Length: 286
Ligand code: FVH
Image (cartoon, rainbow, N blue to C red; front, side, top):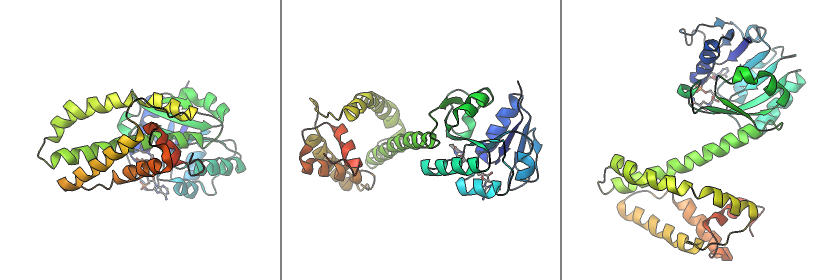
């Protein structure tokens, strides 16, 4: 069944969404602040956000940030609409936007896109949604061609929370990769060769440990028979010194070294590395 859809924002992501929806057979109406963007798209173009929103019940916003969503929809009649906001933001912003939409008579779904624009409509892309379950169920089939959809709960902030958590994991990996690359490159080792033959297999095997660490965290049980925090803390001191000797900055590594030192100083050196989690919550500190 085809469903009319509005897409607000024709940035890199907005145009990937609009294209995919149009290719899936849905009549798409788009609006972009700067006119003339993405001329190749076979879609209807509205001159104002109000004109666009009037074209369909389902309104997808994919703009720079939440203030730009409010700016765009300021004064637009949203009564009876379903606003799907795929703009990246914080959980608090998503909850506020849900309240804002409700005041205007609209249902609200917040979304976190776990893909780059090139992945939209292809395998491997997923979008996390939270907010109105009813709206999600009603429009699931329309949203499905964009990326695998998952609904994470009625709390509108949940998609953003888990989106940001996944990005946090990604940035941690990137930080580790960059530091490792800088270290080997400082001695003339080829970064490509090192990455392909050593780092990636090693990081993959390290990722296998995460579910067990997650269980430690949920159980608040940090006993370990492998290298404990004290050993790792001294390892990080050694690593940071090696960086300095090689003329590589320790900026990315130093916070982790310092966190470990703090945990050991609090008397938890015999625990697993996963117990560092406790230092990240100001309320905990066991
Ligand atoms: N691109 C990506 O890989 C990531 C993947 C994960 C999700 N993000 C989020 O998606 C939002 C849009 O990202 P984008 O890649 O489309 O971003 P741009 O290409 O920079 O386009 C930005 C659009 O926002 C419009 N815009 C900016 N400010 C305003 C405003 N004050 N009022 C109305 N529209 C505004 C901009 O319009 P224009 O500059 O063409 O006039 C673009 O349409 C974003 O939240 C990512 O974090 C993408």
